[in-house]
Length: 146
Image (cartoon, rainbow, N blue to C red):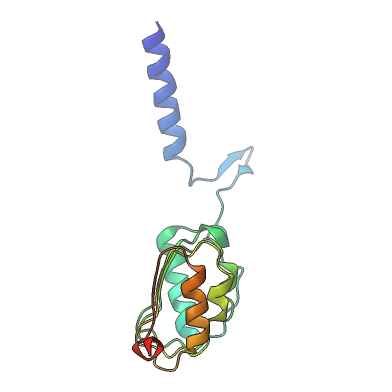
């Protein structure tokens, strides 16, 4: 009897989890709507905006903190303004862009891996501060190792 109850409970749970992306209605009135993708952010750099849009879609992020990885290498990014709201980021690849200022990265508390190689205009002071702040790997452009 216990096995049957466990089996029914397990099946019911699987069915509910499989339907988490559907809107449920009662008398044609929504009673549950799954959260949509996160769109409440503003960045001025078009390359960063496109990269964020794709990452949010890929990771199905419904809140800013849901975004954990960002791969924006070779995207022609010149500004990271607005990135600081994505506080869940742990891995960021911004290699081979046109960055000079990376201050928004200093406000991301969970950064573990940051790749910044190939940003030849980067202000090394902020990069070195990020080296001290991040808990894992920070890769800076070659001119910052002098």
